[in-house]
Length: 390
Length: 52
Image 1 (cartoon, each protein chain N blue to C red):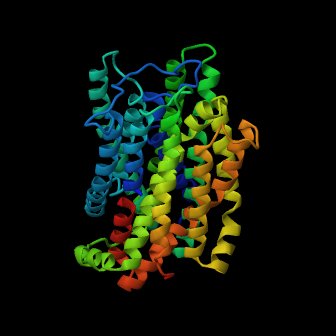
Image 2 (cartoon, helix red, strand yellow):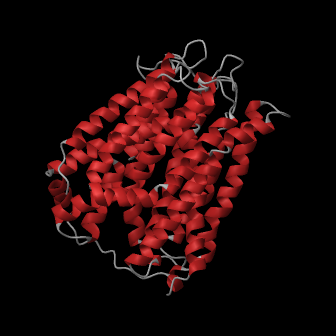
Image 3 (tube, rainbow over the protein chains, first blue to last red):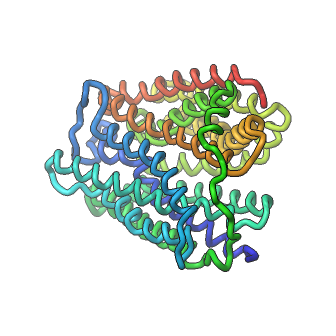
């Protein structure tokens, strides 16, 4: 039963795998299907219809939005099915086994349009997106549930949680190498081939990493057998939580944060390559710098949050992020620094809010839910799930 | 979190259609303006939340 360090590392490697496998769909769909054009040439041809649909949206936007949204709902369903499952492989591992290969393959094929016909490519993209989100949930939800069962006590859980934060970030850092690798490979092939080759390499690495917890963690031997019979009244708990003004306000501010931070993730390549006319590989350098700096700020931020309070620290982070976006809107036109310095300044400022939200976001929600429900357990867990969805 | 990511995925490509090239970069700049406005709304709600 005792969860030894190698087992925890094996578990955390799975996080690296799914972080890398999902990186492309989360961050590169716009890059590939609506490529940046810095005036020299467009990196990729138009594989899908580029224009407004219903006067306001795009095909790509609607596909991504719908996929993400239903992913959240599907998550809850799979979580409950996994809790109740009985299998000789274990109730978590069996779902992970079903999910891993369709997840990995669809994460690659989403970037392999099948023809020059944009309608056919759109249908292909829709099909691959559905398979991607369904299979990702099959792997990720049971994988996440495994953490509590692998940990021996809250301290152990915190340790594993820290490990997977590190491996998650490592997955993102490797994912951001895409720009450098594409730049490198494109010296001997087209940009499309270079990008697809990079994604293929990522898929192979991600699949091997996601296999590690499946192969090395035996649920019967290494995990606590937890009783997940649901004795809560979920709707009662949700109603109670949503009647709380603090929780509602926090949900809205969290929604705003995630919308904005997702845009910087998706948009960085446009800011660097089009607005600043820097090379693609600079995007990799910027993101790597941001992640490393963000990590180094974890300890100071905990200290600041203890001194100022979590909410006040969040407010400071909000204002720092607003400043970052105002600077981004003026990139290439700022008179006081070189192009690289402009993006470096943005990276240095954004590292603080990224670290802040990474550390104290869940802590604040946990405080609110604890205060309202005055209990932990399943109700709190489902409220967290709801929070994650919103 | 997922709703936020969904909204970003929905809005971003629409703004890109307003200009995502070196000649016309309006859409790219508007993604930043849009994010700043969204964050301002988020800040307003957080400002009106008491410390728990």
